[in-house]
Image (tube, rainbow, N blue to C red; front, side, top):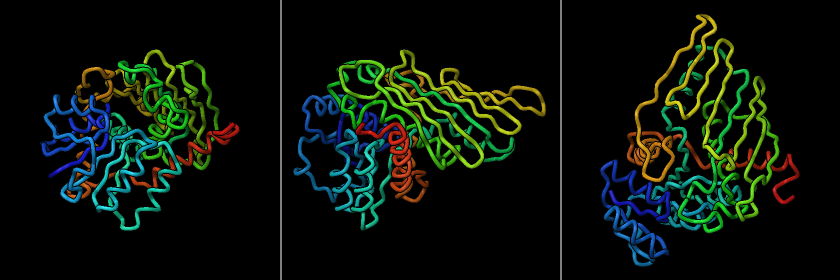
Length: 329
């Protein structure tokens, strides 16, 4: 199969690695920046181009759009025009995703990223919740914290998309996390919260979101920030007859069973992080995500996320921001 990767920044290069790990070597990468093209060609041996006009787009089997979120739409439309299955990195702009849904009148297969659904610990936690073994969830708390300058240590926050308010790092991570939460725990009826700039990265962006999710029979409290000097993902889920605790640093999660009065530990499969990334950001979940994308149009897998679900997640973000006076406050 032949793949076109649009955007050769950090995520575009990761998707090259994903494809090559799966045995796909016929890859062309597009990026207007010469330094990114040269790096991708040197490291991975792929064909690169500065212009899509030089390519026969009908000759590709699939597109992967790894541009900043505010540049997704024209490239996804291009994939739709050529009826090519298209994978998109995480979205944060509600109206842009709605525009993609409206434009896709020929029902081209579009796969929005949902990376954390492929994390081995989240997959196991989701399986346990769905089994019903411990009854229903009563409440949960979750803290996802990172430090924004650590994302790209080689450039300033203001030099890539996370320094723009609409696509700011903190704002982007809210739907990134919600995409797995709504799958594992369920879709909330309502959301409300606050969002603030608490640290100066040289850009006018909010770095901290604190919000609650309300369900008919449970409640959740979540903090998402990019001001944490040490990266964390800490989860506590209370069920009727058990409690789940997960810290992504630990390499395992634990369940306390009320009936037996004991803790049960579930170990995490070994995985590796690429050079320059947090040790807990395993490449395997990204590879698995691309495996499911390809399998969805070749008939071997079902991709677990849709544009319609992406819209619903971004509508939750909108609710949170509107409850604190709106994004344009």
